[in-house]
Length: 179
Image 1 (spheres, helix red, strand yellow):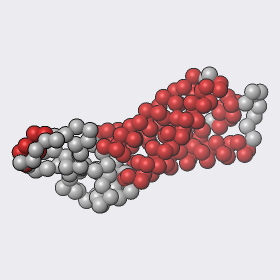
Image 2 (cartoon, one colour):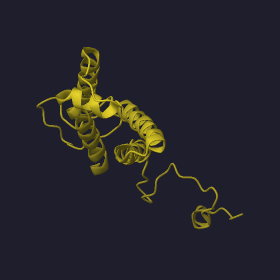
Image 3 (cartoon, helix red, strand yellow):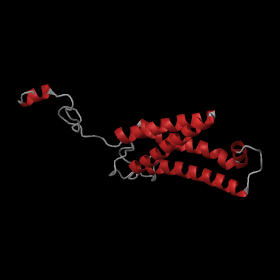
Image 4 (cartoon, one colour):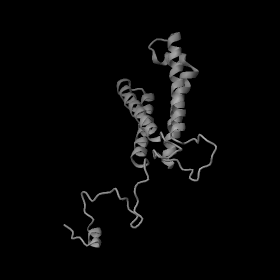
């Protein structure tokens, strides 16, 4: 589950990194985004700081709802967080992972289009970081969202199929003829 923790902590950190300049100096952000240097209006300052607070809040919620930070002081027998919906430590882990994955994918797409349009290196960095987080989030949803059904006898995952290759050795042991 190291990748799972890495994803949730990286998501919170990336959102906090994006939120910091928005909250600390909205005037600097407006000056960098506009073609002429001017003072930021009250509305721009309000919207900038609100976006910064929203990013911080979403990052903290991602940590709390995925079970990366325990919400109770009770020690559990198993300290590993899972994305299983029956797990009482993180019942909203999979939906939270899905929402943050969509956020990172949309952010990567937007920064990529802005990078192509403006050729600003900051958009390239945003594309790379958001794209990497989106890929890790997809990996967590696909491979870390359940324990699988491992056979006690063979140690193999029971959900696998023989397509496109047949397991002729297993068929021979069962007494079936391979086709």
